[in-house]
Length: 156
Image (tube, rainbow, N blue to C red):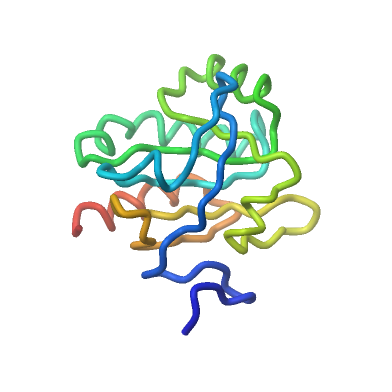
């Protein structure tokens, strides 16, 4: 079993690739370096301000303290601009990092498949070394991503 399976993307038990993207404030964030000694829940989602994506982001917001108390940070990634992420964050009072992935380069590195004409929705739970503990894919139920991540972390 390799680090990357074209049909399934990155595999559980492997380290995420190194990448660097700008956050909602225009600051470069380098991963997995930025999560070392913490761990993270990274979620990829199609579009800011769409129905399912907004519910998902707000569910992460509403559980942000729980993730923080467990020692994990939350990071959302899609191809929206830095400015669009800043507006989305402000509009919904999101206390976590949103990263801009122009051209979906990182999304492709993770092997996330498109659904129809939209990018996929997938969540990765990472330990403090950047190793994938769990991944979850469900395009239509964004809130289930939070439940899955919390279930894994409570047993971690």
